[in-house]
Length: 308
Length: 308
Figure 1: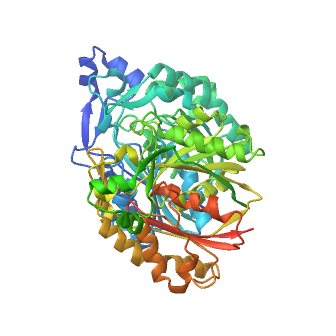
Figure 2 (figure 1 turned 90 degrees about the horizontal axis):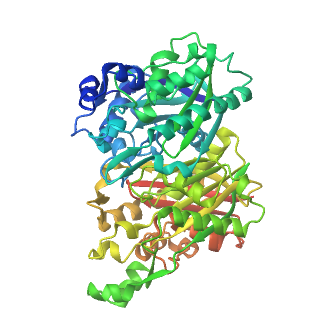
Figure 3 (figure 1 turned 135 degrees about the vertical axis):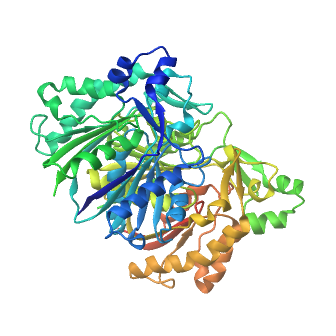
């Protein structure tokens, strides 16, 4: 039985002052705190490539887990839609070389946005089980600073850069329970890159997430023999402070178990959920948790993790 | 036990005359026949997007298999490095909507080049098994006409556009046997897109493939209890006529079982192997076959398929 053994992350040191940025858009601190949920955004150095973020997160994972040696890593999957250069070759291949992984490693990129960690967990677990691999690393690294239009209030206040690395192997701390997925390409236009800049219809995405995610989590909880009342924690994609608050409010009393933390980094796309797990899940008393990612595609994925 | 139930394809109707193209590069017909292996290259209409190629291949798969209904498809994975637009959102989401698949479908893109079909088979099988899905479609669609520099002899004579769709489900014709994978990002520069154009160091790629692929196939054959002498067929990535011939020659007498067909389309990247399987494997007397894909990354994957 393979599952999640450990998670590490890399948040670049650069910070954007979101209060100052908001002032330029004639928005005040109250707006930043209530709608965005973070007064700073992380931003990578322009010279840092996506593969550098991947390599930094993997090195942090290796430092944290001396039992995981470079030569033991047999799979590296990178979730990104902002890979190195012009996307050919894949970023995971470039990261393989930068990290110094053996050439026997299976590498590929998964193109997904904010739902990417949930999908990616099942993609790497499944790939490893289908091919008999024992140790793999799932990386999320989707630096939106590459595609940010700094004159666009809707997105410029929201997104930050980060990467995470999740060790998948035997004798895990968390096993992967039931999962459900969804895709609605009729909403492709709501989150899209055109002429090198990211555009978002925030209202559409907010409405989609606030309506869709709770019933979707209920489906996987039911399959796991759990309920909205009995699950120990909700680890939602941190799209913004406002969307996390809106879902928590709809959950009523259960909303107290919604974890909210943008880590002074912002919406880090596929990295938000693993950042929550890294910080809050391992040392908790939780026996189970439900997670849900949603965004670009439109795409969504919900799953239950069970402490082993 | 899930595996390959059926394969269909879509080769766009447009054709480039490779003899005429070669003449402009001061190369004759003998060069085209011996080195390239096809006198025509397929090319999509500029108005056709990658998702249109995906949708056409999936429709051909559905037409061929009335038992597979749209509403039964639970996963759609697209292997591409030349997706729609600027790569965000993922092409599989756009294809989901164009095909009319239900929104409960799990969609993601896998970024890989010529090794992509082999990796993709184990990625979709594993993902489906890890999440309990019964029917999925693996699509390959990597139209290099989007990134072709028509003044570059090395690549302009070689690549064609195509898409394939592989139905993965229960009661398969072919089951997935042992597989091995590899990645060497130190060779990332040998196949790369810069300023919108694809560049290839053909000599490096040829040398890599002609040295690496036979021992790699031997590894998976051994794990399957087969040998280079006993396997029924070799379905290699059709990188060029010359590379297929070179590997066949190194195989000695076994080279007779190497399938060579560029389908008047050219090197269609991740579509070459499924095109071979569609045409030659299903109605054959083969009990088993070995396949190997290699290219962009550098990346390679070899696997054995076993008739059920």
